[in-house]
Length: 142
Image 1 (tube, rainbow, N blue to C red):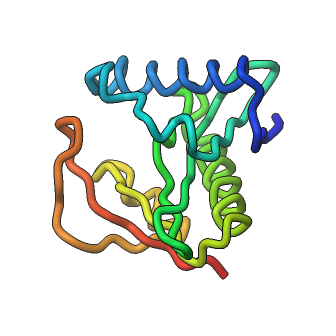
Image 2: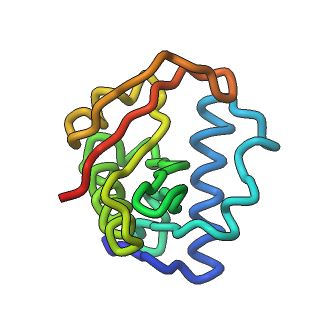
Image 3: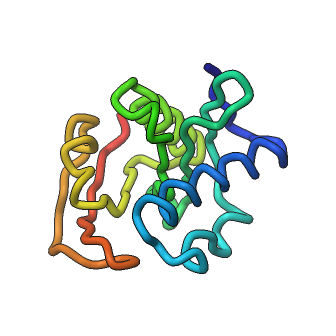
């Protein structure tokens, strides 16, 4: 398995297909909400195993020292095998390279435990995004 910090167009398209399978196919997110303008400017990370995208996410600076991680998706068959942890480590590494000292994400409530195990802390009230309950979570980078 390899981590790609600057995916070529074919790898990025494979990551988009993975996101669509997870968010649209499994979670019922409307297809028109899955991709947005940030895809063109965000830094994408893709974990590839045997030429197949198995996990992906994106990160972007939203303030000089604050990075936002978004669109984290792991192939259903790979969940629980450490690839989610690996893609988050790569996204946090990229955030640090961009100058961030804190990483923020909007966690689906069902994934809060996963992010807590990675050192994230939930804050604020529950909110809904694409019909799914979320909470904000932050992690300081050291």
